Structure formats: C-alpha cells, structure tokens
Length: 114
Image 1 (cartoon, one colour):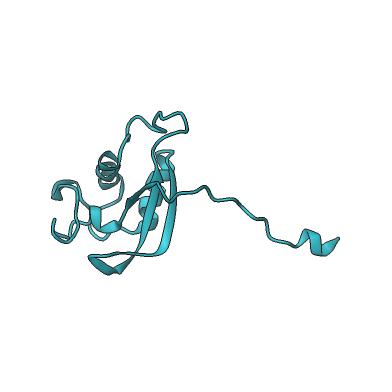
Image 2: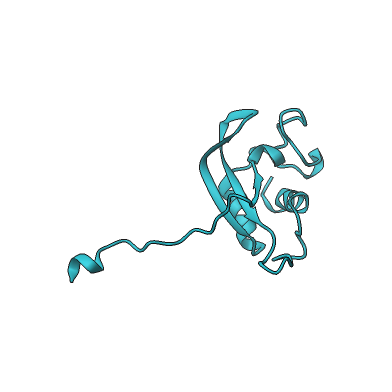
C-alpha cells in the first residue's frame, strides 16, 4: 500500500503546440526591432524574465506554459519562452482585455516593474 501512495501524481498537460509563442526579447527595452523587440520602447521593460511574464498571464487569467529550455533564435543566450492560449474552446477570449498577442505584450510592459 505504501508504494502505491508514494507514486508521483501525473498531470496531463494540454497540447500547447498550436498556442501563441512569446519570447522575453519581444518586450525587452534593451533590444532593437532588428533584435526582436515587438512593442514600442515607451511600453517595453528592461531585461524581462520569462517567469515574470508567466505571472502576468496568471494574473490576467490566461493559460500559459513556460518552456525554460527554449531560446529565441536571434538571441540564443536568453533562455525561456511562453506558450499562451488566448481562446476558450468555443472561440471566445479568456480575457477580453487581452484578446491577442500584441495586446498581451503591451500589458506585460505595463505590469512588469521597470
């Protein structure tokens, strides 16, 4: 009986291969557009961490998975990326305030401490 109780609980992860991808470089103030920044400098933050970005998603009630072993192809020294699902199975957004990737990146720029 004890061996049965000591076994780890297996959690089923959803298939996130089709979810949107966001790298820290997308919102990094130190990066140029050519280096991968996707939002205006006025809304970007300096050296964002993928875990800070995941906390923003959690606060905004979005489904997000951190892939810590992945790196952005233009800057492979910055590890980590987020996979995010914006829509419920019926197609409606989880959070109308951030219906897409661009809105989320700008919201992260507001939420992450500068």
